[in-house]
Length: 172
Length: 172
DNA sequence: CCTATTGCAGATAAAAATTATCCACGATAA
DNA sequence: TTATCGTGGATAATTTTTATCTGCAATAGG
Image 1 (cartoon, chains in turn red, yellow, blue, orange):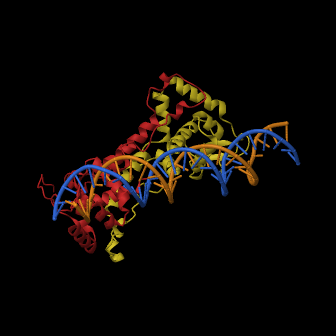
Image 2 (cartoon, rainbow over the protein chains, first blue to last red):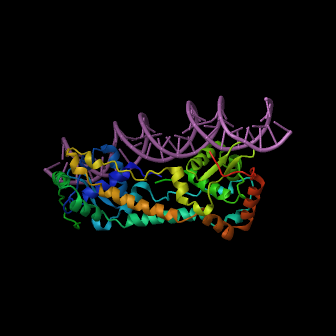
Image 3 (tube, helix red, strand yellow):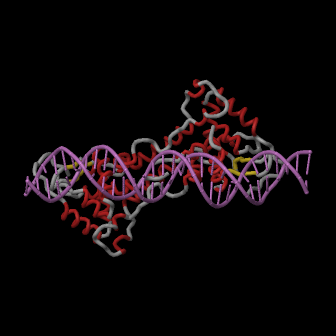
């Protein structure tokens, strides 16, 4: 069982974007630089977040990314599902049917108990992820992280965020 | 997030072995045939289960595999960890340190809050897996599975299991 | 002892998924 | 008009997973 590296990048980026002002944006290249990641690959992940309506993007100079809704309404589950996909980790291949004894299909109408148990565990996993909001991550970082690190992050955001012209609905 | 196919095979094999009599064994080739799996690859997985003391193996003709302890004391978590390894699914790459601003290592003594949240979720996942015993899987199959399928499984086990010479509580 | 059957370890190969790069394109602020 | 930025597709490099093969050790039965 393994989560792709993109998950870590995506959560860190989202947490960073949570502290840009109002409807300002931050370019993907700045996010990549901020974590020492390959810009072209990170964009792939940011795109998935955009496709799942977790981020919004603005084209053109002064463009970039911002959260599509307040950090209070984005959970770690949202991000993990956006990056890793919605498929469950355990996929039942129904190998019980593949033996030498061929039974009628009607013998397999009941779902496999193993599958049920594995999916139950995964629901617990997702429920736990859904309990942590992006705002919790940010608040925890501000309250318990090292002040130097926090200050550096704030400075970085302040330096790279870009105010937008059109004042549409404001995010917080 | 993805679980290897070996997990499904391992659980099915363990469930099958749960219904062999006493200290009898069942050869890996029979287990592979029972689920239409490649024998040589399945042996890899059975081996991992043996290495983790979930199965015991007996060499020689009339040899094979059996459970190393009663099915009541084997959980799905035991099997999943044996096959997938004990590493957590989320591995924190500490990418927060990789930015352009180089801070002293003392700024990163606090563990990353993102990592903590992800590991918390994984603990929930493992706790849920630990709640299902192999005996539950077998009991459920006997009680709620299709009678034809259950009878076929029992017949298969009866046909392939091999009694051992009396003195056996040792292994590898 | 001999032989056949079985598990075990290691090397290796084939297939698939992940990670990463590049380029042509449309959007847009200045 | 131009430079900056996101988008999408194609492609390649890398790693992981899946699968096979071979030689070897263990051992039941003759």
